[in-house]
Structure formats: structure tokens, C-alpha cells
Image (tube, rainbow, N blue to C red):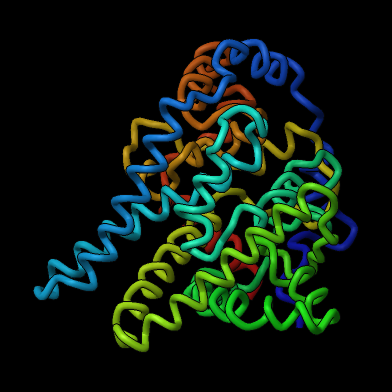
Length: 359
């Protein structure tokens, strides 16, 4: 049985067809470019301390969760670890968009300090996420980051969120066993690359083989996660399983947190139609101030996800300024204003209500 189906009469245009027919709002697109030219440069004075402090707090939180004797203190420390590592990990999103020469050394440092220790090196997103922004791929079967979640069955949403609990186990098996075995078993290597080497949610997505300089980067990052995964497993011989299991639990909670955010990153109503840039924008979500909680569940600029789809290369620290300028220029009731929503729970309720029609 299919997880989703059209929610309109047979002869009526589907929701996706209606959205795909939305013409581009050229005034909004021009304003987005013209009002942000002076804030388009990534600032190393913000990227570096933000990433480094987030990573440091995250690892300190894991250490506290392992070492603190008081259960409540350990739990609080674990909560800090989840939020901090979540923020540190989401810099992988910035790495896919900033110019390779914009922040010298940042990609390498992020991989050494965050990507490899968390078994999610940057190649898992680089060359993948940009497909999600491609004009003719967004929301189609070739988009690795899109599923018509609003058109699926009600039970699909909790399954989608909770399957992330298994992510750290899957990453550990991938890095410690499957990648090294793939060196001597080419069909397995091909399978792992195509099906288990991308941070994607589309089960039909198949990744193309890496080439050139990117292939060399993949080799070194794969070597790094393989060696690190072996060290993690070897640590149980003298530390026991408790530290590793606590660390994996923290990563699981982080993955679920990110999966819940993914549920409200878009409206998820496209059924495979090609969409205009404006239609893609309206299928995406901004959760702007005055609410402050979005900075916790959608950090590193992801509370402005719709705006990001208008200006993918704009640095995360520039998005609040860009939002204020566009809101002031285009006004309430504009196309730009229609992608702004009040918060996480209203968006989850909207999505759940949509799936209830699929029973």
C-alpha cells in the first residue's frame, strides 16, 4: 500500500500541480538579490568561534553525562551536549553553500573536530544538498531531501522522526564494517556509496560515483571515520561499553531533534512536479522572531529556511538582516510574508492535520 496519494478529485489539479503553476514573483526575487549584496560575505570572526564553542560545549556535555554521579546533573549535561552538538553539526549545511575559498581551513577543521568524530563527514552532504536546490529537481524524484510527507499516512510522521534513533548505530556499522569491507568487495562498495553515503531522506535516491578532487576528499574522510570508528569500539576493551553507549544516546537524541526540524522545514506538498523558485519558496518555511525557541531547534540560520531557498549562498549570520530588509520592503501580505510561520508546534499540527486526510 502506498504511503501517500493525491488528496483531490481525479479530474481536479493536484495540490502539487497548483503550486507548480505559481509564477515567479519577480519583484521578490529582485529585492532578495538587491537588498543583500552588501551582506553576502561569510565572516570568519563569526563562523570559527560559533563552531568551535558549540563543539567544545557538546563534548564537555558528553563528558559530564559520562562522569557525573548525580543522575539529574548527568541528564542536564547530556541535554547541553545534544543542543551544542546539534548546532555544531549543522555547520555541514553551511559547508555545502559557502565558496571553497571563503573560509580557509574551516572545512578541514570542521571535519576533524565534528564531522569525523560524529561519523558524518562533510562529503555526506556536499554534492547532495545542492541537488535539493536545483531548479528542476526540487520536490521531484531526483531530490534527495524531499518526500511528500503531508500526503503520507498519519503513522509515517512518528516513524520518520523516531527512525533517527538508529542513526548512530547505522553510522558505526557503516564506518567500522561496511566501508572497509567495500575495499575488497566492489559490489558492496558501490552499494554503500549509492545507498548509505548521503544525508538524504528520499529512499529512491542513488548517489553517483565521486570524481576528481572530490573523490580524493572522500577517500581521506572515509579513512578518518573508519579509523575513528575502530577506536571507538576498541575503547570498550578498557573503558567498558557505558561511555560509548551514553555518547551514542546523545547522538541519537541529536538526530531525532534534527529529524523533527526536518518535518517543518517545508510544507511537503509536492508530488514530483517541477516548481518555480517562488513555488519552492512557498513550499518552504521561515520561523522569524519574535519567538526565541527557533534558535534552539533551527539554529545556524535554519529558522529562515524559505529565505535560504531564495538565497542559498547567503551566510547564515546574514539571514536575520536579509529577513528584516525584505519584510520592510515587501510588506505584510506579500509573497515573501506568506512563507513566515509562528513556530514549531503550529507547523507540526498543520502537517499532522494534512496526514489525517490520508487515513
